[in-house]
Each structure stands twice: as C-alpha cells, then as structure tokens.
Length: 116
Image 1 (spheres, one colour):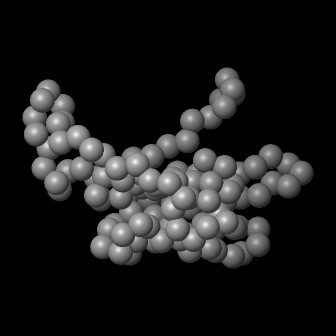
Image 2: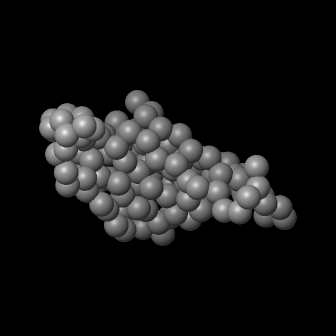
C-alpha cells in the first residue's frame, strides 16, 4: 500500500519530472517520468513501514518510518545514507508517548528563495 507521494520538476531545458512513493512494504520508488523507469530503495529495517517521503532534489530524498526514524537517501545508493531516530518519549504537554505513536507521519521540502 502506498503511504506517501512527493514530486519534483526541474526547470527547462532539462525539465525532468521525478515522483517518489513510500510504501508499507519498506520500499521507496523513485519514478523517472520522461525515461519511463523506476528505482527501488529499501528502509533500514525489514519490519518497518515507510510512512512518508519527500524529494529534496532530483538525486536526494527523505523518508519517515513507523519506528520514529527519518532517513536520508541518495539516488546513487540503494539504502539510506543517514538516519535520525526519535529519542524522546515525551509528547505534547509532558504526556508520555507510547511506542505505537512515535511514527514519522509527514515530511516536506522547503523551497529556496521567495518564489511562489
């Protein structure tokens, strides 16, 4: 099941369109639209669901998983090149979080400059 989608189109003259999808089967798929191809990437743990994803550039992207990790990927590597794990068990207003709600549920890319 697909859990997240992200897209990015680079400016002309190259004008490449990339779509990234995350899935419950621990995979990320980077779709190269113009070439009609896809590349498959795997999360750090086999028992995890990747819950969200975001393209940063056409060659780098991030994914969040159900265990509270945010992983950085490069299109040149099949596995994550770096990961940060949530270490705190404190939620909002000092309430203790349970293991089940430590999931990274959203990821986004910040645009550069003041453009719309």
